[in-house]
Length: 140
Image (tube, rainbow, N blue to C red; front, side):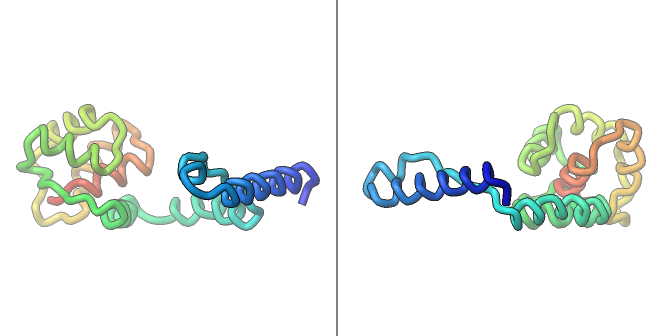
């Protein structure tokens, strides 16, 4: 471990110990300080590789279950319902994506992957996280 990292980690631990020793209200109002460890960095670096290997549909399913968001019908949801669902799914610029979803309606009801929507959204090059968020908010 480099000396500067060790000093930073030691300082962080001393700060945490000092705050804990004070107790009471001071402990609850002090900002939390985290010191990244080598294992946390390694885990964070390996996460994108595993996330990138899954399909947008699998990512969408994981995002929906992780956030507990409910889905709306891609064919019949109102503009407000689509915006709300995309916002809850963490999709950036939900108004814009709502317009795109509505533009390409109707979608086949027997296609759980919403492939027609995915094909049309591909024109706009959404990043994988945005596409996964959009798909997690919709049902055919």
